[in-house]
Amino acid sequence: MSLSSDLVSAFAEVMATVPVTLGDASTRGFLDSAGGMIPLAGTDVQRIGTVLYLRRDSLPGLTENVSVIVGALGAATAAGGTAYRIASIDPVDDGLILACPLGGGR
Image 1 (cartoon, one colour):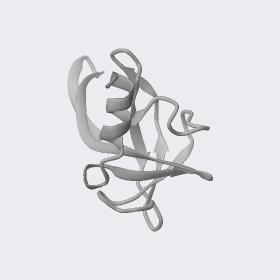
Image 2 (image 1 turned 135 degrees about the vertical axis):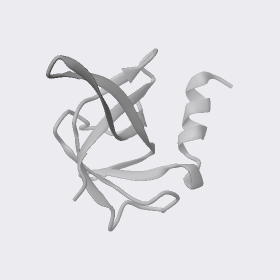
Image 3 (image 1 turned 180 degrees about the vertical axis):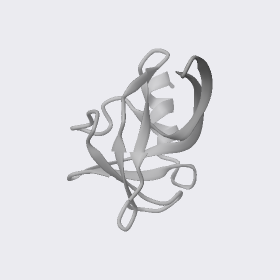
Image 4 (image 1 turned 30 degrees about the vertical axis):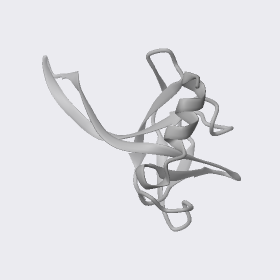
């Protein structure tokens, strides 16, 4: 087994992932809350938000400011899910996984 095939297996675990759709393309990802410190008015403030973790190259057309539909945890498809805007695309460590903070939620 390689790291790449292990990632494919991990992201294929239906009961641990959410379905994600962008246009006609779909994949599965991990949805989590993550936080960080941001400077604001001379001090640091903790920001917590929703982050979608995807395998690199698993969702063609993924760029900042596009809208994706995220379905429920364990659902087969993203149909009827929530629309989010991809705020940024941040490679994690070696870049095989992308952390995508989400905005919106409509």
